[in-house]
Length: 307
Length: 222
Ligand code: SF4
Ligand code: SF4
Image 1 (spheres, each protein chain N blue to C red):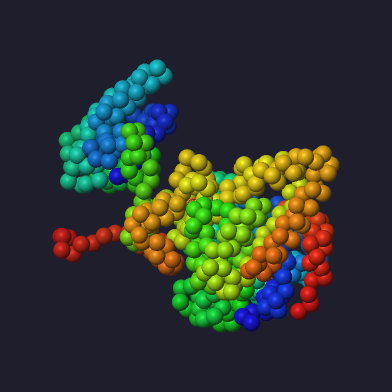
Image 2: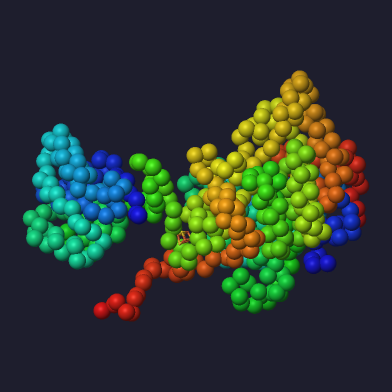
């Protein structure tokens, strides 16, 4: 075991892990974080806490992670390279670890163009792969990125993202391989709607033996409405929502659409369970945390293991 | 080359309003090529300024001069005979040229007429695009001749990110994904293994993170 991370223990014990996420509020509302956390109690092994998601300013991932930790959750600190240079990152990693956070996800982050501060500088001192290298070196060698020794180094279980649906497709497995070579212990994928394409990607992953070198959590998202399905299909870069999913949502009357979205999500999980190399699920129910429990239950993923 | 665009006329008028005699100085290098501050643009701006001021019931005398290279002190010397006859200078060079003139003529106000944009190349007639950010430690040898620092919107050294779609960058369909281009080029060269190697974190001291940069060539320096 590399760390004390609950997620690592669940995965190492061979259970299908379940994580979900909590987007911190756009204001000083700690109770909102607790409220979102409440819905996830007992149904997931870890809660991702997003870092200025979609380049909109929110309560910091670190602060919201600490609030969730106090409530008994296992937060996964997300960190994007867009907003911090390597000094700030390492400082926050030490701070997070000192406050009991032992799992993190290294990302580059959405471009500022998409958020509420398009006029801000994009930092990108290091990229997500270099961030993984840095966190691993801090943990395994006890060294800062700059080379100096860390007294009592933070031991993070290191996560990274992968998007099997972005282009060029042939690079998608190679880029995963780079993230693993850099030190990623686990991967959370982009939301999977196109299971066929995901399976194709996993074939490539298995051909390189990458599923044996790190844990791959398949990302899923319940769709609330046909409008949301269309938006994700047409407007979100790197998102692949097949037309038949849009049609399935459209075939339902408005009030039945949320239920249909949940059903699609549960069916997707069932299909993904059969894919060799899938080590768990990352359920991104954006502003719909209250449905995670139902999804996990219907997908037969309860009770969560005690490790 | 260094690319630039002319500032809006109103901003330039605000700069020169207090003055009666202006020296407008162009440059024959990059800003001529990108049609922002060469001899022709100097002529156009001189009449533009004069007309705008006349309309506002004021007037200004504008002397025009275009230097071979405004970032070179040797050529800036050419302005010496003209400088006493004017109250202010407006430079139509890039920021380097503006500063060279300001350095040489300490008691004359010097204003920029251009917004200096980036180091780039001409994509087609009338279109210039960024190509290099002068990071000081060139990666092009590893990336198939396409710069991930200047041309990837996230400056990823180990791209592409999850937003790359159909060859476009996530920031817009009118922007090429640098990593899609890099990959195509590596494939064409049979150099796919270049991609596999992780590019380590950059030392930004060479890219300006260490303060203003300078090149000293002992063999040439006097
Ligand atoms: S790698 Fe650096 S020096 Fe080379 S083109 Fe890009 S910014 Fe310029
Ligand atoms: S889409 Fe391509 S160019 Fe744009 S940020 Fe991502 S990797 Fe860089």
